[in-house]
Image (tube, rainbow, N blue to C red; front, side, top):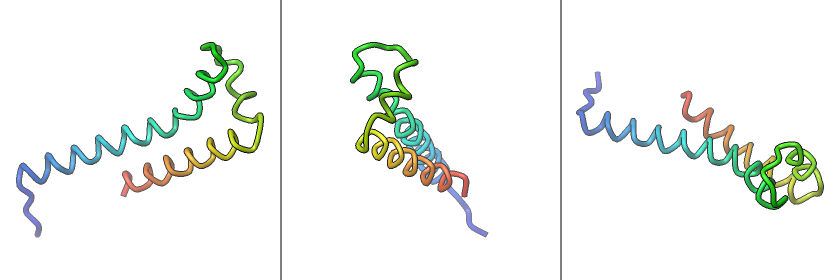
Length: 76
């Protein structure tokens, strides 16, 4: 049986919190970038911007794949 000290538990909670923030940030990054590039905060334009070319599609997929991997790692 492994005994965990208070420090170890706090460190693990801190790592999980950082990972959760990373997942949320990576998932939101393409949407925020699309909103910034359009010059307005209109959510209606985001899907059009995210699918407007190879780079936005690749950036979105890459960001969401990494976020999904981090989320799965969190669940383990």
